[in-house]
Image 1 (tube, rainbow, N blue to C red):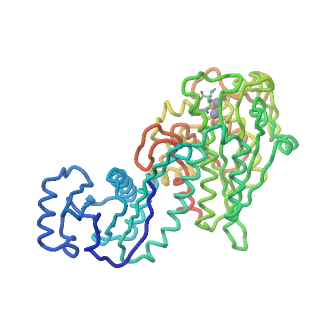
Image 2: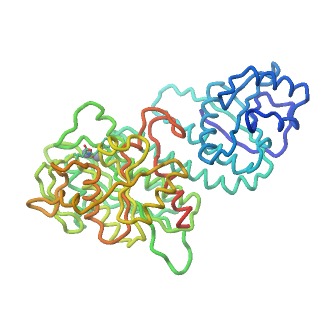
Image 3: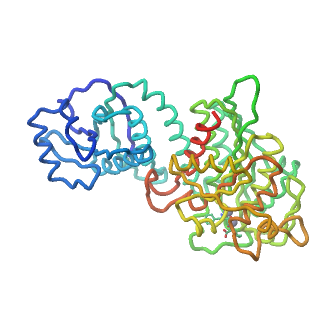
Length: 486
Ligand code: BES
Ligand code: ZN
Ligand code: ZN
């Protein structure tokens, strides 16, 4: 359902047929007195009594022409709970098939404007749909008019929340696209469109990448008929004279991961269209920074490839020389994300000399075994960056959990005939050894790796996600930047 939100400062109670109001502390009707007659208040009290008060949202007809929806707010509700309530409200009104609805925010105790910002943010994030491939489009539309006291206060945060919604949905759209449509070249075309927001987009094609020595990334794309790319996105929002080093984000963009010659089994292979989610989040993040004109310099780097078997494909046992000069023995062509990131990481460090690098990747199935769909795996060489990511994650409920890096895990990645091998056959710890592999391509920069394999896509709806691509990471990283780097 498409929701069109507008804001009004004056209410004409009589003309409203679908009317939603907030109540504080267990359906207390006290605040309703300015908006309803005492007769109406009495019937509302009766109707509340006959409702299921375990639910936070109830609705009934006050008269044949007036439909009332009451939203109960518990004490000490935090911002994420407000967003969730907005998401629940969306699910509630979706089933009512309304064309227009009025939402009165003036019955809220305090923090009126902020509450409404979070509430509508949750509602909008939950209302995302990906239906461009349905031939019959019966999409419902709802006009939602919100009564507010101080629109200026709402507007201030609205720009930020809109930017995050657009960035999240951009990432969700990219992840949802089928792999026959969103192959690397088409992905590049969509990133180029970000130029109109003032983002500098630089595209490196195969011939350039070859000259630069990015053989680790190129090796992954060799089996595919589609060209591989590396794209950088630069947002220069810090106009101050003494330039600080930029912050940087690197994303795995494997548009489809068959496993290559180390072919994956057929069951659920279709899910591997979401193996580019890390890169989509990086793109969505940079887009949101540009839309909200964040006063910061941020770099996004994405490696876009397709991992296919074929006559020209990379073989298990091949040795490739990476951008930083290290040789990699490719023991398993399905451990391809790290091969793409290896070149993208060392390129980012060398070219941009960033303050830190955060990479995002659907890197290992093992992280789903350890953390499920609740936390992303966090691996880092820096305690301060880890703590900041952890705290930002709790705030927006895009949570990360740190796992260890250690020289004994690192040793497991030594190859007998090259500098490093891309998988370890013994020692377990699949997500950690993948992170150890990545760390070999970072020299000295503070770095954090987020393994989002369990977070990027969800078959079922939950909280702010309607099911499908989640956009996990866009909100987390916006929060991190807002709290510590702007
Ligand atoms: N893209 C996969 C990881 C993945 C698995 C993401 C399930 C989302 C859901 C990655 O490229 C991969 O295949 N990893 C292998 C590594 C192994 C060969 C060491 C894995 O996790 O099995
Ligand atoms: Zn793989
Ligand atoms: Zn993969």
